[in-house]
Image 1 (cartoon, rainbow, N blue to C red):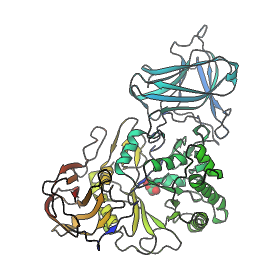
Image 2 (cartoon, rainbow, N blue to C red):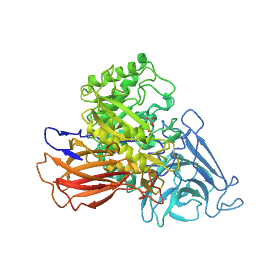
Image 3 (cartoon, rainbow, N blue to C red):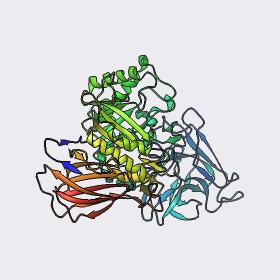
Image 4 (cartoon, rainbow, N blue to C red):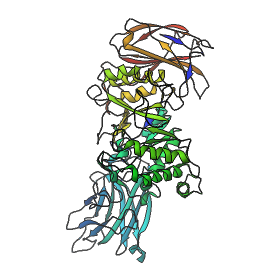
Length: 620
Ligand code: AHR
């Protein structure tokens, strides 16, 4: 392997080269990254036009003690449904309530993870025909283990009006399959709405689940593409993600049924929260908008202007000064400073759907007229022919077999260097080769990314998809990060991305492989600086897609500094079997392993394991 690090041959890789695509799929956000523990907190899950659905809420006690129903008496105009609970028993006869009380419970998303000594903020809205004596508690899934409880006692006449109640519950025990309970032994008619349980310690206090964000931090995504994926389009336009319905106080958000991945979201993770997450991760936000096209219906270009205005309002929400109409709403949500929104993708996989070009141009012209600096991403593939419409970037998605992904190391070799650059916003090995996330998939993807680095004068950005899967609701597999209420692990494809986390903004050096089995070896090299200690490293990455161990000589020219004899690290991702996967029980079966290099130098021997991704970080 020879690295040509001469300035003439080298060039800078785009700053945002490797990022991440977050889609609300597989309960990635609701019941995932968004730390809210209550599912269907407003009893709204049926949506505004159908009978509401209280699932997964359930009752504690039998019908002789309690009955529940829903009505539209909420104090929130955008989500009118409230739960009515009629308690038929009392603390005195003849119909005495069970001593532990009757009421309702919410098991969260396949069980709430309640941790010992952690603090949980319970918020709820309540109304009653008489005084209130309700116990709010966190308990095990069958209610027998009480983790924390607090009483809500309201004697005043005012309970006939909606009253907001907040309680901080400190858990005295731990249970990963817990539930929230609202119970009483007092006869009466009660209404509940917008019931929330949030752990107090969330990422930067912004509502994100700590352990899952730390996985994101680990791969240092340079951009965050959101909120999808097909989720953006919807099966039908009426069910697509509409940003205005997801901003403002959480209690007032209507929530919506995502009819692509078939689940309800309360939209606690809304437009503002996505922008906030991007900022918190120092990642550039990339907003994928609905362009008036869903999987089953579309708006004609002649009627698209209200949709364009809606998106312009959204950009004003993100970027406008606090004295603008929509910027002021962002400011009231706690972020007076504009977010740095510089990328907007017009739709997702819609190039051949509806009247894409007609709609696209209306969005393109509308956005550029006010925000000429915003980079607009087209859904049409410009890698093999010129686009017939203006764009700053074109979207490119690939889900394929491992062999095909490996061969795509050359996909962009002859892509246009003059037109818009590629935004590979979704890539993954898919199908039998990938299983639920195999080493084989990760190797092929790593080779593909090496090809993207080489072609980073034609490719600007790239991200694996999907990012997250709640193991209780796999709608699309494989995914990079698998979790349940309390555990998580990265698939080999997740760990593969760690090899590329320093690439954005680094200097790329052409690298050639001359070996007998070179067609199964691909390599690239960059120099990058560690911001923590300002050390500069030459990083050489080599993917060995073959089953033979390879003995290599690594050489280089053009480096200003010599390779230091100490301080260099070799990292290898491999495993005994190509189909090996990680799991909750063996989360570290296929993870990168690092070791100190003892023979670092400008000419060095190296052994490359069979079926591996290897990086050499040589200290300069
Ligand atoms: O990543 C999963 C899905 O695959 C996305 O929603 C869609 O864009 C693609 O077809």
